[in-house]
Length: 245
Image (cartoon, rainbow, N blue to C red):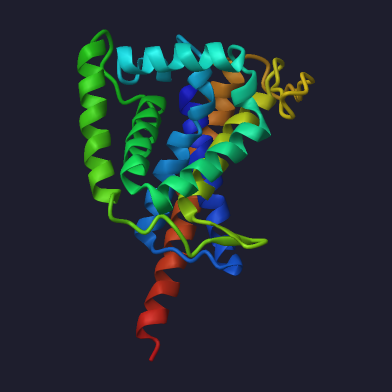
């Protein structure tokens, strides 16, 4: 379900952050928090191939049309967008936008935040049009707050290419989605366009008892623990860097 994907994205980000500094990606507590939001929203992106999924109704007719178009191009639900190739493409695309086309990145950031809000359940039952406006207002406000953050580099350097934390957060979020869908019986075509699906059925059914009463509580607890750990560690390192004499 959408909320599980969003929680998995945030947990993956907060669990990874402490190790990024060793590879040149140092972040402030504000960037860590922003990255958690971005990663949670990006964990919804693979489901843009679902014409009637959680995110298809995020911004009303706009996202419904977008999802229908992507579903038609990608081969339908759980095909091209549920692969490692898609994760890499989203990571590189977000990185290039955040570094070279900032305004386009803001548009993408607005969409990602909106998807994350929808995923965690920011909505009023049976008020679809109000939901879309509320989601847009919150996403717009958060985008405005994040717009001036340094999303591009210093980042992870690989063979002359530096991946800023925006690209890393988006790619990691997409990967978290693929992993969480991969533990259901339907699996994912991880190595698309090769049609073989990776399926490790640890969760018997979507929105079943295991997801509701085991996976979701564990992810929520993990986010709290990892959030405190990551933020406290980053704050201490940032303080020592600027006040250690």
